[in-house]
Image 1 (tube, rainbow, N blue to C red):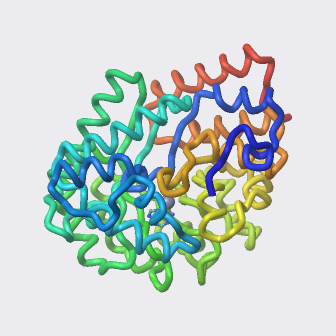
Image 2 (image 1 turned 90 degrees about the vertical axis):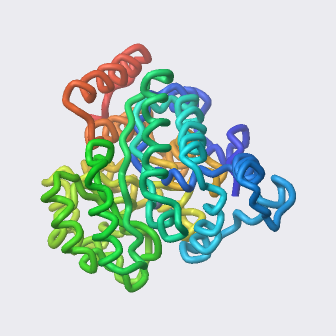
Image 3 (image 1 turned 120 degrees about the vertical axis):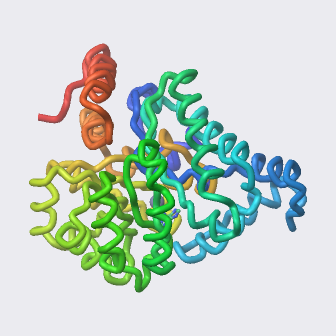
Length: 357
Ligand code: ADE
Ligand code: ZN
């Protein structure tokens, strides 16, 4: 599915004034996988640069492989695509291309996941990965005027011992990594499998998040574990929480952020989950709107806001709340948060938009 912003059915059918408000909104992106930003054009260029032969001969052929209808199907395309990433320059170019695109959509703060094990497991050193990504962050901060953070994810379908070894490998680079998370295939891989790794990460000063993907077997148990046993600071996706009102209350009390990705939801479950997302938003839970794997889903953050606003019939005030939530739950310093919130509030005030009452 690709979103055509001029087509009311895919631009979410939002009125032009709301669409313009969304396009210009200063945004924080809190759920994007750097490896999921690999556009077919860059994949082709990196394959050439590294002398890697791809089965696909054109950008269109690569794009045609970006087809998926479940999380598992998606992941079987996703990991092999990464073999074109070899040098620190490759990781740098990937991240900077994403940050440049995101900035063009109003993103002023980006927190980006990366999967070191998807690279170390094929012989690319951890240092190569993190050095390339870090250099792109520095460039974006200097030249694009953004703030950025990196979140290191463990692959939950691999052994906890490998996650722990990866955590140990990351310690010398602690200053460059704000948090650890959990991604990849959730089936039979609950957060509790990584309890020790998370506890050690916390001891080392990392913040903690976890994917709780949509409609997985055991989704609600995984959310419960993440909140009660792991003590996460945020949850990625996680809207199955609506199945348990007690957990919703707990998340609201703790101010837990939920990094939702409506178009990703549509791809992997056939449903954007606009209902649960907007119910949570309207009940004061800090849900946010993000892009997940934008090159695979053909859409970045603005299209996600548009799609959700249309599907959930969000008011301009609710869209503002959604954008504000992201800055509130972002892992920013107090000063940086104040600066971003002031920019957002000024943008809204200039347009006569206030938060929902
Ligand atoms: N890795 C990249 N995208 C993911 C997603 N949506 N869920 C789990 N793991 C992922
Ligand atoms: Zn994700």
